[in-house]
Image (cartoon, rainbow, N blue to C red; front, side, top):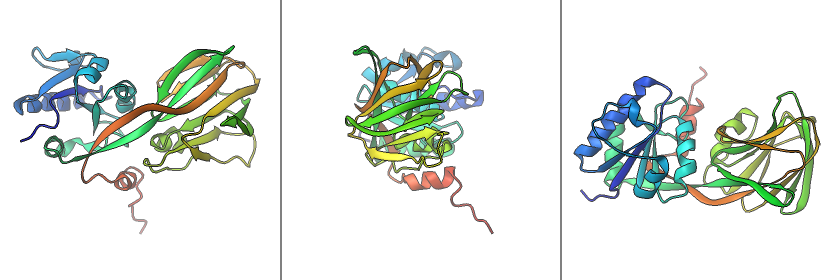
Length: 292
């Protein structure tokens, strides 16, 4: 069988201890197939393996052409933020709850992985968002997000007011509990919980969604992802923060200026040929459930 991948990394720390058996079975199965298998260093102490080859997540990005992430979507977000800087393809095996990103079912995983390793797969590239925080015309922080960038007060009871500019032109002012700037990937995450639209992942758009706005007329705004979003704060009480994919938090001040744009990086997801995004939505959101 022709090898489409040679060096394979196993990453991801699931929430449930029982899920680690998937890592071990996959490790031995891949070894038996003749692949070089590397275990993420944060993971190795939780597994019963003898002298495995161990790498950091960034080194897996450098040396592996495929990373298999086991767990929930949070594991994909954590790994993808690092691996998107490299040319590493990612497969997600769902051992979490929803599994919008970790879409492979572990019950028949070896049959599915075998098809992928034999070349029966397709690659889906998803864009990321980049945020830059300027303070006195100096870049204070710069980071990326796969799902969403959320600007919110440190205390949940504090509303704040901000102006949004798109490509240098004023778009709107808003007073709300926060602002979600989401990719199509993130449209089924936090943005969905806040009342945002579900956006097909192939679309090159960005979703802007004020959270609990102080007006009844507010609606989600969908713009082209080539636009540059500029956010300036007006009436702010207390401290503000930027959350990236719910993991990375950047503290900001009311006089800081925020620029958000499409990142040059891409998340490269590997799917079996039968993958259909609408099948995922049907299963995860119970769209196929009959009401009679």
